[in-house]
Length: 129
Image (cartoon, rainbow, N blue to C red; front, side, top):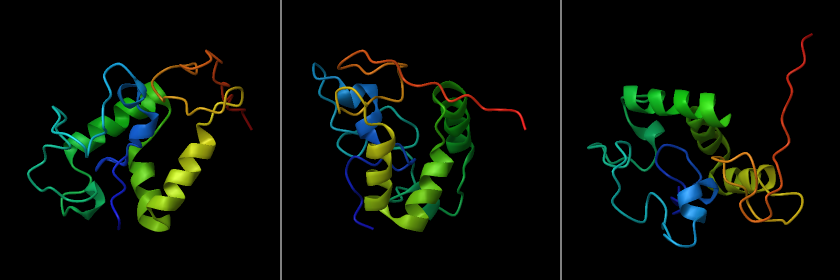
């Protein structure tokens, strides 16, 4: 794999992170700097967490649970997609999924609105069968 620099070892697409999109702080992404994140500081230093014999570790499962609960996104699902279809396909899929229909910029997963035009995200309503 090429290890696209905006794809974190945990499966987060940094392009969708509020810190990466914040123009004032200019975060280069998880692969672009040393962070306080326990995933990027992992002693195993794999390209992606799924390459580690301990996958999925306790820390990754906790991160996945937090993102599933708070942001409707799964790191484990992201990693499975990257492993099966590759980084380029994952990046294309994410850019399409998170593109704001009003202004065309990428939305962050961390807010319920587009930080560029303030367009609210469409809520996905799960219907009972």
